[in-house]
Every structure is written in C-alpha cells, then in structure tokens.
Amino acid sequence: MKIAVLPGDGIGTEIVAEAVKVLEVLDLQFEMESALVGGAAFDAHGHPLPDATLQLAKDADAILFGAVGDWKYDTLDRPLRPEQAILGLRKNLGLFANFRPAICYEQLVGSSSLKPELIAGLDILIIRELTGDIYFGQPRGRRMATDGHFPGAEEAFDTMRYSRPEIERIAHVAFQAARKRSKKVTSVDKANVLETFQFWKDVVTEVHAQYPDVELQHMYVDNAAMQLVKAPKAFDVIVTGNMFGDILSDEASMLTGSIGMLPSASLNSKNQGLYEPSHGSAPDIAGKGVANPLATILSAAMMLRFSLNQEEAAQRIEAAVQKVLAQGLRTPDIYSAGTTKVGTSEMGDAVVRALG
Ligand code: NAD
Image: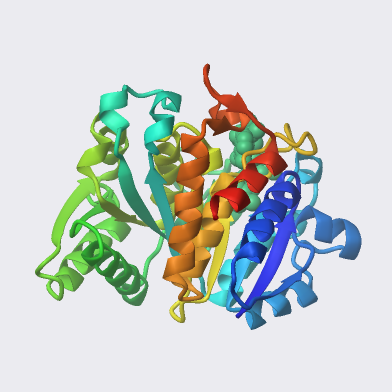
C-alpha cells in the first residue's frame, strides 16, 4: 500500500505529522513518501504542484494531504497560487466525489453554537460533486457587455454546466453510500431558477429508479441552508453540485463545533483518494503547536476504509479519537471549562496511546 504524504503549508505540516505518527504505530505495511505541495512547493520549485509531486500522487493508492495556502501568495497569478494544487490533483486524478461527514461527538455537544438537543447524535454525510459546475465551466472571463442591463460596461461571467454522466456517477455514489447508512438521500438543487439544476434533478430522479430501497427527497439549496440549522438531524446523505456543496459542507461542519474535527475524502472511480481535513492552512495559528490534528487523523481513518480496505484499522483510530475526547483532552478550538487543554503533538500522542 503506497501513501503519498503531502503536508502543504501552515498548520498542514503540524497536523499531518500527527496523522503519520498514528499510521506508523498500526501494524500495517505502508510505504509512505512525502513531497512538497502548495506554497511550500512554489517557494522551492516555482509551482504549487510540481511534476514530481503529481507523479507521486498518481502512483499512490491514496494521498494524505494537509492544507495549502497563505495570504502572502494572494498576489501571485491565479495558476501559481497554492490552492491550484488541490484543483490540479482533483483534475489529474479524476477525483469527482467529495465525502464530508459532519458528526457531532457526544463530548463536544457544548462546542456547537446550536442547542444541544438539535445536534446531539448528529451524523450526516455531504457528498459534493467536485469536478464540474460553475467552478470549471467554460467560457468564463471578463469582457465588455454587449447586452444586459449595462451594454458597453465591463462585466465578468462564469458558466454553470453539468453533463448527464457527471450527474449520474455522483448520484450512484450517493445512493450506494445511503445503502450503508439509513437509506435516505436529499438531493439539493436550485431547479426553480437554474436550467442546470432542473437537469440535475431530472437525472438524479432517473438514477433513483435503480435504488428503490433508498428514499429520495429533493430540496432547494436555500431551504437546505435553513433546514441545516433548524433540524440538521432530519438529513442523512446530502448530494449536491460543486458550488452548493462547497457552501453547505462548511455550514454543516460548524454545526459540530469545530472545523478542526472534520475529515474529508475525495475519490475517483477506482477508489483512489485524496484525504484531507475540511479546514485550511490556518496561517493565524501556524507554528504555534495549537492546531487540532483530529480532523487529519480521522481523514487517515477514512483513507484506510475507502482506499486501502482496512476497515478494522479505521475503526481503531476512530475509537481512539473518541477515547481521548472522553478523557477530556482538548486542543484550544474545542476547549471548554472542566477539560484539559493540550497542544497538537500532545493530542497526537494521546491518540497513539489510546490505540492500545
Ligand atoms: P482556515 O480553515 O484555514 O481557518 C479558518 C479558522 O479556523 C481560523 O481561525 C483557523 O485558526 C481555524 N482553524 C482551522 N483549522 C483548525 C484546526 N485544525 N485547529 C484549530 N483551529 C483551526 O480558513 P481560512 O483562514 O479562510 O484560510 C486560510 C488559508 O487556507 C487560505 O490561504 C485559504 O485559501 C486556504 N484554504 C486551504 C484549504 C485546503 O487546503 N483544502 C481549504 C480552505 C482554505
């Protein structure tokens, strides 16, 4: 089993080191190789995704990724910015299905801004399509308007588009994931306004005919945003497009209290995957040794489950994380009175000990 380890920038290096620590004590045969990505790769090689890093990722069964980005790169041309590395990896590896579970751990109910009764026991899975939609649709750009409200004025435009195969494959992923859970899928769209999402709704409905045992509900994105804070436990699997998924998955992540707890996986059709925490490189706390490594450690557990076929090891890690939370250990982002504040590496060490 070959794992490409790409720590990236900011807290990426600190949190990935803890996940690697956890993987190393499991009794499994891994080959792990690290490479630079993001701003660190730009500084060393002039590109956020150097050829050697891309090749390492392509040759691996899975990629363990930290985070990329720092405000100091914001003035670079867009293709050279650190975040382009993630887009490049998604595109080159065909990573079209993004899994973001939002789980509220019993011990962290008090960290959420919502009332405990609304989020206790929350366990939802957002499946976001990753390679299409308005983020990638062509044409896009700036030009002088020839029509619209202000002909002759400068304007910018993007193109929202989805093809039938793109929608079909993400719908299959969602229905199959739902079969392993409570057999309920909510497909989120904006079919009342957008042609692209009327098509999305039609195709998801067609694919659903192959999954009669799974319940399908359609919901407009504005309503979904409201329901996520009103009654989040009413959802199980949510499937949606790239842009709506980007926004709703961040909203869902905050239901659980801290983005520092939430793992994610991006998979292609061969189950090769990129595993990363849902948060960014957090330049504001980088180098201070206070970042929460649990999202990255839980991403490593997802990696074992989805790409490396090691369900038992995945469950061991998840149980160890529950155990350290039950012991009252907390990084500052999830700290509350009566618990014990620890740093990044202390938290990693505690998970290693809890593995038993
Ligand atoms: P961010 O997720 O990095 O940080 C948002 C807030 O959450 C900050 O206050 C940060 O301190 C806190 N936070 C994040 N992760 C944490 C952790 N593990 N433990 C404790 N606190 C944590 O988002 P941002 O500040 O908007 O972006 C910072 C940089 O990260 C930008 O350059 C952005 O482009 C990049 N980014 C990268 C990714 C990625 O690599 N996938 C994702 C989002 C943002």
